[in-house]
Length: 218
Image 1 (cartoon, one colour):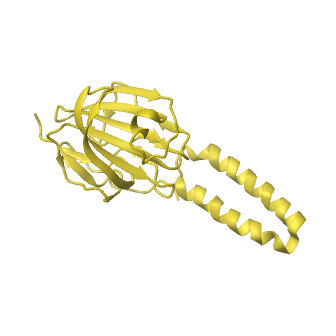
Image 2 (tube, one colour; image 1 turned 180 degrees about the vertical axis):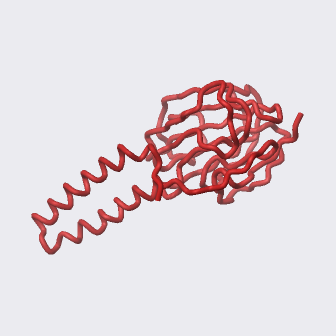
Image 3 (tube, one colour; image 1 turned 30 degrees about the horizontal axis):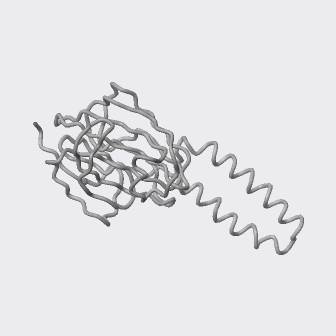
């Protein structure tokens, strides 16, 4: 199983803790040490599972908006996007549990025209205000269909580290990686009002594969 590059520090710490706690359990509890070691082994295995990198065949897209993450669609609504679009947009939010793949992918192809990191709170990721009050990043892409598309990584109650690798001027390719969020979190995508939304609340998405909307070329 291939592991994400962001796993190195976390797995190093998890391995050291597993060895230390396991050794102490064996030393002090002897035959009862399995009561500690077995649950610890499950948690240790979940750390590896969290940082997995699945093999996915990413296609080229122009008008399709692709799910940026694995997770569950929890919100589709018209909102005011005040940071970049500065007007009304359709917000599609996808919540990721700690068991989901947490690679963050471009939802559309085009050119990165804006990026910014915002420190903030750690409200639960499904809280509506987390989009504007939590630790988050904002990226905007001028799409191949000549639309401005904004997407936002949002830290949740558990997630405390967001990384994004893109720079202004980079070519964005729908379905390809631009960042990562450690543990439970959310991704918001802000689309033009005339966008055709093809997903619905409750849908389970696979990042880089599933189409969540379509935009006609202007």
